[in-house]
Length: 91
Figure 1 (cartoon, rainbow, N blue to C red):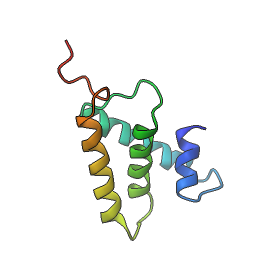
Figure 2 (cartoon, one colour):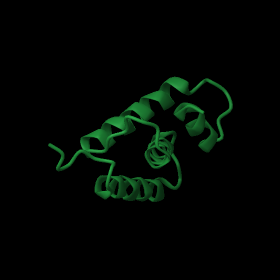
Figure 3 (cartoon, one colour):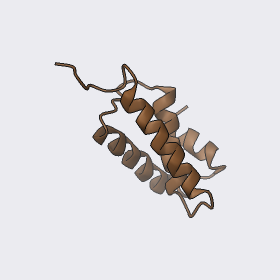
């Protein structure tokens, strides 16, 4: 299942009306994780979960924005510090 489909499932969206907006958030999350040094050349459930959390945080005006932001920041920090998710120290 594509990440867009998983994001729509997490947001309980069934149609295609918001696909462009959701794709923008997905790409933005990838860039944000990339700036933090997180690599995602192959599909990975931890990276995808962080991307979906970012998308949920940005889509609409969620009443639990602070909780989603905290969750995303924690997921990003864990990925930044986990072996195999960054290129830090690789020559």
